[in-house]
Length: 348
Length: 214
Image 1 (cartoon, rainbow over the protein chains, first blue to last red):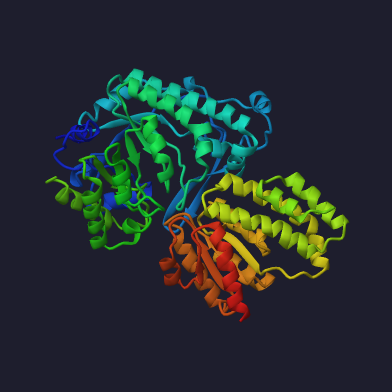
Image 2 (image 1 turned 180 degrees about the vertical axis):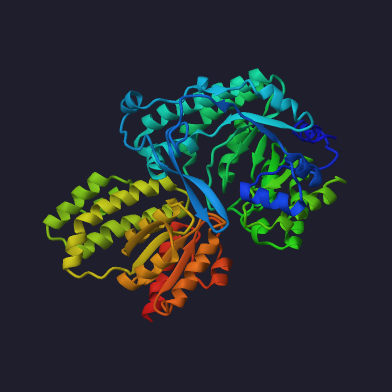
């Protein structure tokens, strides 16, 4: 099977020839791995480690010129240095000062879907005929937090619901149109869309189920319907301890649950399989906070084995790191993860 | 007549103006400031912490409660200073070098303040030497450090080592937290305490201060 066939087998509840894999990494971690293996291209790396990478497609920005270190939403960014690399973090929030939707409407220009060009997508997709293609989707509360600042954004859920509703409508509309245009530009070629929102901390949900129902679920449902109407599978990403909201996400129609941070509260693999095993495809599961980053090669192998034994009970598991692999994770551990799943996940 | 229960209740529901009003009323009626603090503000935040641990409250509810508590605290702070009312302890909080994530650190700071601690907020991306200075200059008893990222966890260790090198760990306790942090990691780097969430952090801080006193 090709990587694409392998993913589609799992997505369509059929049996793949082996457990599919996926790959997420920061640039620093990726470069370390490429150097470690002597790979020169992405395709080399995927072939070498049997990675069935979902290839991402996105439009190109062609809108008004952006100020330095400023994104399309007007949020300011800063490069922050850590020991072995950098992160680009949002440090200024263009909607922080406003106290009404009228003021935002008067003073702020929302990005327009016409600021994006999609014309390169057919040629790009054609380069990856054997790989699953992902594109479109939404993660508006993440953007909302950047627009307002984290603390204000959280307090807005209680104190300024009208501002949250107004902004999320704008952000979801942009995501919706963007997704629609991707589907139209490469019809029947997108396999999955991310409908994401980080709802969990290490210990519990970040905000209440009521707030999730009020602000996010109806809008996420619209995105999910758009994807399903186009024959696209829905990949739901939320970090953290989100067990309490998974039943609602299943009712909403998600197909894939990511990233399975099984060390978080109430997210252990056995519980997830017991509670939702028949209803979801599990994607991720290799712990990025401890095992991949600080574990031994043997511990990585054991985790891969356990993940396969527990999460693949229904042939509905795609193995991947729980988030972007970080530069602290030794390349040897990453190689061990993919070699172990290739060895153990082939005779399923 | 001043109503300390109303102060606590309005802290719990995050009504900052109502807390200010009730605290001012209590001040005007010469209610002992310790009672306003302990039976009003701290009592309210204790309930908030319990509800947070119990998944009845989430981050938004805690944030507005903490802001209401702060509104009341600002009004009584000058009187507390004047009356030389002792705080539960002096702590500094900061997100370590290389890391700008501060929601967790802010929640810990707010909960500690709501538990009667004097809190010095060092902000984010804080280098080890700033933690050291804070202990030297302000007589901090507990250093609270946060790291969200696996790549910045190493800064926790560097800071513990800097505090040791400065000879400050005998009279100071170090507490750490953040998404990838565990008790095991705290033990490994020689931190005295770890808390998985902001409510537990106040309990841990009380324990650590008691250790210093005895």
